[in-house]
Length: 275
Image (cartoon, rainbow, N blue to C red; front, side):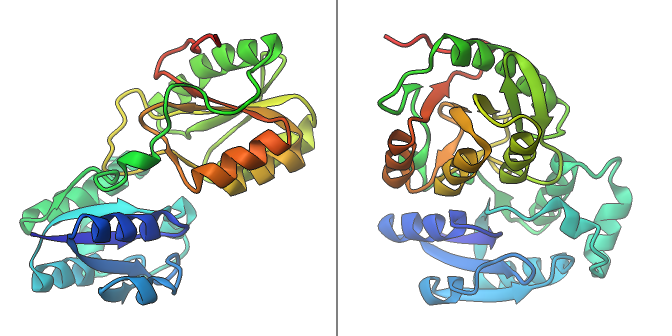
């Protein structure tokens, strides 16, 4: 079977390519001109470049390559949808019929269009199981009492924000919400929080209560910790089993070196208590 990959920005698409190669799977890649790193051409066996609105070209490529199952990997910034990119007729028709243009509706619409041509959009972590966050304390330092309180409070708020499909991340200080993610992404949210209330910040990033693992899967990595250092954040909570950690060893080493604790929390409102 041949798989297809719709590649956004960042390292996620490269890890999918690597995982597919390890599994001996054949992969055809659709690269987004406005988002995908050009290095994708050096690692993928077959690549076509499309504009953000060229849904028809993407589907035609997959059909030509005999793709039956496809993944989405890597962020496509929400603002790109409103950037003035000219959609082809298929994208325009899909957008016109959407009841709203939030993440789930937009990508769900693309999934429906793929399905019309016999292409199933599947779990984006299909080749990525080793990169999912485990449950518990992932760093040397455990969260202190203040950070545990921030996580417990933050999980309750963040899960509600995620349920409303507004964002996946909030930043908390002293059980008060400092910043909430919208279209700007996690790192920009953390930076904004640092400008508002630097020091002793807790970052809580969650999967949606009924996270569709086909798309918009939470991701953290070295840039997350680097941004936290600049913002004065000391603790990061992610949803265990549903959050991808990229470059895990380097990320956790950087966190340890800067006395930042990282916790894999269950998809509930309470943190796993440290041993």
